[in-house]
Length: 277
Image (cartoon, rainbow, N blue to C red; front, side, top):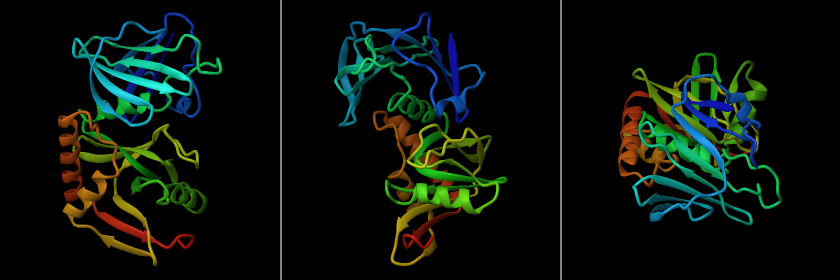
């Protein structure tokens, strides 16, 4: 059995030879099921092999870390409540597919694990997108016809509020997500994509749209819209993206992406007085 998910033209395939302590389909990921050939294929397996962890390359400080094993392969190690580990992902190299190992008993309470939960699918996407003209933004985005507006912000900046206001007041406007948006350069143009990594508003759409404008959200004493110069825009975007901090080449590619965006797409600081947007 194989399930394929397409997020921002990145297709991730999950293959299982037998049933196990997992489920491979869950809301809102079911909205992203696709038939495209996968860019990354993962075999889902029960239990854990000898990992041979050799060198930690990144520690989230929470419940996941990235390692190199003794052969140089990259390994994502995920803990969860009462389980250490809960999932282990050996990322694919070249034509050699990846392997996703799941705790044999399921989660701490014996329930099936959905292995694409945070952080696994996001880390896979972040790592892959950095090599393919893309990045994951801490943002909401609106598709309004053929216009796409990216509203970038830290937690609490107003992303879900913005998505909800557009959805409730602008006919046919589609919030693509209220917490994670993929930004990519495709065929010479910037495009924004919805993701299944939703926020508290539960907005998650598989649609995409050309990028028309970028808005950096912040609370302010009064409503204000100020266009940013390219240097300001790059700095503001860089601290609100999920760059692959374990990969210097990927971080450099993300920085180059923002430099080009800042020169070609209008970027604004959008300060608003809470409850008066």
